Image (spheres, rainbow, N blue to C red):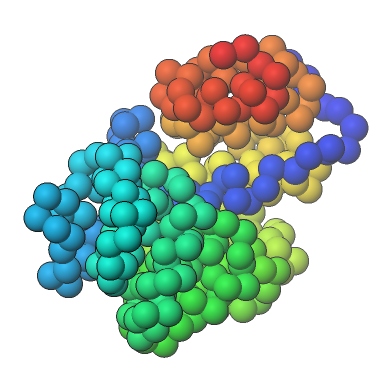
Length: 303
């Protein structure tokens, strides 16, 4: 099958490949599709921080466990509490922002995070929530500011992660490299190294970026993420033959993982191969039906 066409009309954005929680989590990669899709875009660290804080919502809605168990129900309850005129104290604002992020409602999350930070500007966790929600709503400069404040208040892996990703999306590749290396030094693992490669690429160190991803793929033979990143970077540069080879390797490792399948579908659409794109969409529908439905609508494919 040939996938050669004219110069790319559409480059797969880095944000599509790895958005905040996109690359593999540190340690052993998940072995099942459920393992890859169970996360709601919230770091486990946030749950741990909330548990350790002793904060709690009313007895009928302990937000940590409620959000973890049923994010949509928790979000509806917390939203109703805010709408009823309940006092928007720090706990309620935090829980609402947290539930909104867990259900991918990023604008409401941002709104509550802004209010939370205004009330508690020296709370590092609040600053990280603001950085996360600002990043997900495209407010990159604000995300940089909030993550930088979080890092100053309580340096940890997540503040460095958010700072590095926000800086990269704000076009500050050199500054992003420094923050991303901090993240890696604090245990960022495969994900941090993926982002370091992306920042190196953006900084003009393209050969070094691809070499890093190749080494990362070799060191983690079950993990498709370095290959997903490699395919994305090469595709954006117009090197379609090598991008397809990287995608083939990712598919061989994880043929049902949504990131891998979704990327290949987008590549096929961009290459004008609707049959391949439809086949990938059909595969995606089994593991991530909501994502498949949205992509079908976007690209005019059958769902």
